[in-house]
Length: 288
Length: 160
Ligand SMILES: Cc1cc2nc3c(=O)[nH]c(=O)nc-3n(C[C@H](O)[C@H](O)[C@H](O)COP(=O)(O)OP(=O)(O)OC[C@H]3O[C@@H](n4cnc5c(N)ncnc54)[C@H](O)[C@@H]3O)c2cc1C
Ligand code: FES
Ligand code: FES
Image (cartoon, rainbow over all chains, first blue to last red; front, side, top):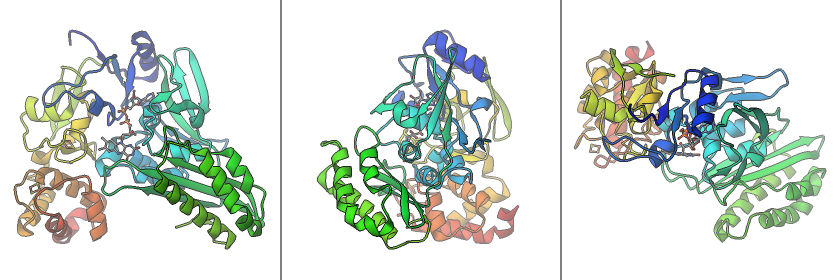
């Protein structure tokens, strides 16, 4: 190892120090980086910046429920671990369980999925719907922000020099009805063409919360608080009356070039289906 | 900071001292000479390079050796002669699952991982279990049938 371009720290402190010193990039599961840095058979992958292999840092592992009710998912948690965890919200578990195929789900980490900020990434979409946050650590200290604020656009995030995502935090959710779809998966290991999550909280016949987010379509996950506010506070019997207004507002929130017309149609139909199911008094839980 | 990577391959202790970014696949095939693990797409999409790392099926073309310190890695050579490995391989032969054979080591690893975690899979579960493994010859049906056969023949084996 003449020219040290890759480091394997044994704990988080060591990792943060070397990340900062070398202005390095972190490698977690490697499922994005090993492909982008590939040089072919027998030739080692290479990168324009030094690499810090964080794959085995114990501080970044595990999923737990915190005392304040939030679920804390270590950044190195794999799609399989998330899909299998009863502590994680079903919308996120669903998204994780449909990523790639079996082997990919054993490698892909949630930290990598968020930091990679690919418009086709599957977990940011439900995380943004749930107002989830990331914890970022560097030698300078710790920051916390919403996933929605952290991801700026395609491949762009607020990650600063030497920073590592250490965990993802999901607030307790009181959504009573949820819906998730991943579309355009003709086979496993194919990227999403369109994903959508929808959630509502219904109390005593009234919609007290309504959220929708859609991914893989534009540079960034789409969520519109403005559109959501049209349905929030309405009674179930009023939903039909406000449905078109909501659907139009949602459609307007999608940037003009983000989705071809037929995919807008698909999104509209899924939202419409969910609202109709609510109006009809569908049972609580995941709506199929 | 680690300066060498210690792991086991098919039960044998290995100490690796080269570039941590070298692909696990190249270490297995080129450095250690276990050529049963194949390279197809090189991008994690075909499953030809599947191995079991710490009990989990992974594609070795997208994992750097630097992520393998302390790991136990199993390749086709490591399961071939075990009772479970023989059960799957003989079921593949009996069920006519093998044509050119290129995808088969990866398929056997995926089948092994599936049956280890789900001794009695449905057809749908078998198809999901090998959905990351591409076969260009068989059209999959005979492979699926053979895995079902391995589950049936090995019944007690998989419950251990
Ligand atoms: C065959 C195949 C199929 C795939 N299918 C899907 C799919 O269906 N859905 C999907 O969303 N993605 C898919 N992907 C993409 C990829 O697997 C995911 O984005 C995965 O979650 C990336 O995680 P990782 O740990 O492997 O990332 P890595 O490759 O290790 O890292 C990815 C990026 O994130 C950064 N990073 C990683 N961890 C951290 C951290 N803790 N802090 C700061 N930065 C970090 C790295 O520096 C790098 O820029 C697929 C990839 C392959 C090869
Ligand atoms: S060679 Fe690794 S998945 Fe195809
Ligand atoms: S038998 Fe030829 S690729 Fe599967």
